Length: 133
Image 1 (cartoon, rainbow, N blue to C red):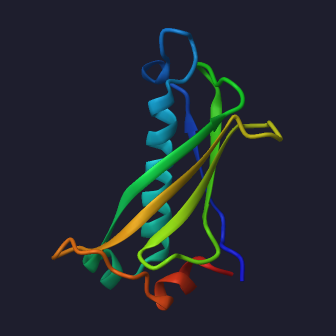
Image 2 (image 1 turned 60 degrees about the horizontal axis):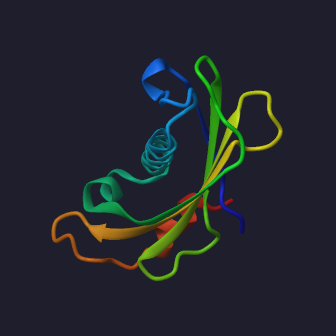
């Protein structure tokens, strides 16, 4: 089974622009976090949302093209085909709308925690199934 993709669009606004005139690196990470949260909320049950939380272990970003003020971006995400215990890799591709190649590609490793105890929790198979075709 393959992971299902999830997509959102964001406008590039003045607050996103750095002194070089393009989107600041931290904005790409913000978009990666925002889409990860939205994807999680769209797939998880109410019980999962109440009892589980995710934290980032690592982000890796490859910058391929600059985005500038007025661009509209399409952000696409999917999780890896299988988690590794409590960790699950997530891939985020950020495109200028209309472009065939991503401007930025991000791989993030997320860790699942019990919401009450904040202890690491193995990703349960019923959660995995909610993200796969």
